[in-house]
Length: 240
Ligand SMILES: NC(=O)c1ccc[n+]([C@@H]2O[C@H](COP(=O)([O-])OP(=O)(O)OC[C@H]3O[C@@H](n4cnc5c(N)ncnc54)[C@H](OP(=O)(O)O)[C@@H]3O)[C@@H](O)[C@H]2O)c1
Image 1: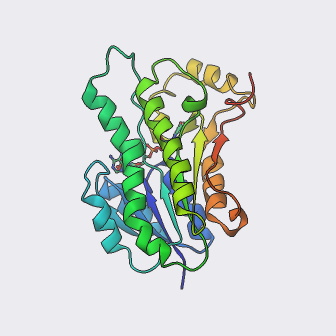
Image 2: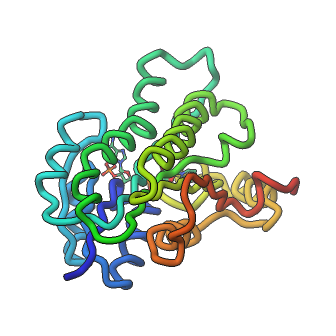
């Protein structure tokens, strides 16, 4: 029987790229997101099952656990948003919404998947998504920087709590061409400036990120847990 992986945000840029790669590697997939149209399109392509729902709705996670049958080998939480703005503009509700979407949803997704992951033979793996904006300070990133900082704390805490049977790691991308980043990339001149701000002189592609997600889910990474891995063209570590 094929091993099963749940991907929250499985219809997004990174989530769909990860789903396609894992499907080619022979995994069975269960995808989660809000738009049924986009979920159904990719699920039909890959023979995946899916749940439609919003991660800010706490009842979603039990629905997913009920719909996914049998043991679960891995969980990817590739849900996120990008809500940039000056600190004086943000209302409390917007901070809380960003926290729920990026961080709390990940914690609840793992909580509901633990019984099915513990039912799996061998080690299992969780992959979260942080951002380069946690290691480096960027203007107008207060809310998303704060929420993604929480993802990094969650990653290390769960890695400690769930070892040795469940490994937990996070990927921290820099700007990557996906629907999430499309607004930021709408101006050709700023795209060039953003690309040049990376030592490797280009922006990320969804496949750059999904390759690491698939590695972290695989048998090649069974001695890796509690890590935050920058896939960022060198931006977090080297000055351009
Ligand atoms: N792209 C970048 O430049 C970049 C940089 C740093 C970090 N990241 C992180 O990388 C991860 C993947 O991002 P991406 O670029 O692939 O984003 P994306 O293309 O916008 O995909 C986001 C996915 O999450 C789903 N989603 C969004 N809000 C949701 C909600 N409230 N409830 C349920 N599902 C929801 C979306 O589907 P629906 O809209 O249908 O719900 C979609 O499937 C995110 O955690 C993001 O923060 C991305």
